[in-house]
Amino acid sequence: MTSAIATPARDETQPVNSTARVATASFIGTAIEFYDFYVYATAAALVIGPVFFPATSTTAQTLAAFLSFGIAFLARPLGSALFGHFGDRVGRKSTLVASLLLMGVCTTLIGVLPGYSSIGAWAPILLCLLRFGQGLGLGGEWGGAALLATENAPPGKRGWFGMFPQLGPSIGFLAANGLFLTLAMTLSDEQFKDWGWRIPFLLSAVLVMVGLYVRLKLEETPVFANAVARHERVKVPLLELFSQYWAPMLLGAGAMVVCYALFYISTVFSLSYGITSLGYTRETFLGLLCFAVVFMALATPLSAWASDRYGRKPVLIVGGVLAILSGFLMEPLLTHGSTWAVALFLSIELFLMGVTFAPMGALLPELFPTRVRYTGASAAYNLGGIVGASAAPFFAQQLVAMGGLSWVGGYVSAAALLSLLAVLCLKETRNADLQKIA
Image 1 (cartoon, rainbow, N blue to C red):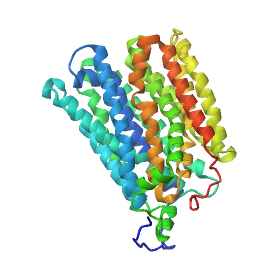
Image 2 (cartoon, rainbow, N blue to C red):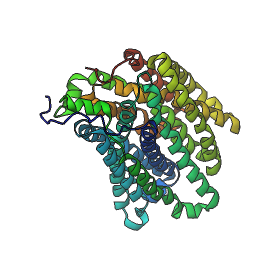
Image 3 (cartoon, rainbow, N blue to C red):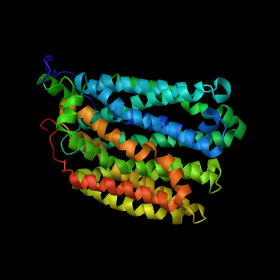
Image 4 (spheres, rainbow, N blue to C red):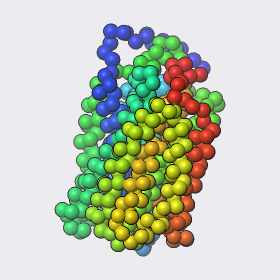
């Protein structure tokens, strides 16, 4: 299965990617990724239902909006296969540029898409198509960013370098949430619902241009360049992944589930529930989320450092156990009746998101050899999203109706337990040599 394409070894005189350039290029893509995704998630909780779906009931519109949110997660594994193929065959740099471009174009087009009142049934159809395209681009984004960071990392620093893309979600979340908060404070409800919600989608085009500028200046990663020089590329990485590396792919996906569940239950679902059931104003709850995500940003470098110092598994085991316990806090804290209790719950969940998410930037790439690493890391990351995030807000909405918030907390604990079991089945990868993984 070895490729017959001969590519010369890297010229040692070529410029090497600096740490600052690697950090910026890997960070900015995931920041834009989470900005784009959370812009839609916030809009889904606030306005997507009434704008794009027929008026039946408020609940039905909210459920339809959350289902459209999940479409992109279903597309992400396909994006993993598509961009992973080219990432493992052609190179990390060019594939990252393509995935970012597709993601940004789809996000921007959502910002100019007419609503149901203007074009009828075409509105939800086109919305779902753009969400699918957004998911395809996102499917290739994180894996490439993580490889860009880890394949440029010096020995013993892969967890720290792998942190760069993991910091993106905190910044992307703050940017999206802060922008929606600003709009909520400066626009009337009517203005926000008519056109204000579109502004964050349109601003994505500016962010994508910045990201493209940074990534076009990159050199190919040395690990991939050396693999090309040794003729180690395979014709169809996806086939080799499924035939030889299906176990680490599934275990990696299982390990990712808790990250998604913590993030989207504590943000998307909690935002919707806080406004509709707890009586918070939109701007107040968005402000609480902006406060809480700071704890995720603080946990990320701490957890990445610990994963280099003590190993990926110990950090993830501790985070998984704490995440299981955190599910039992959801009902008492959210129904306590005080704002500080809500802030405490959101801060705990997002702190644990940072703890469990940070080591993944190094762990998932370390599970696969160079020839299928882009495909494998992307597939594991995005398959975990199907279980942990795609329908999480939808199911949480149903669980609340069936049994209350304690059932939603049980969903978080179950997701954390699944991830904990997957981590326990994985081998420790901290000392693995990326150039020698077979």
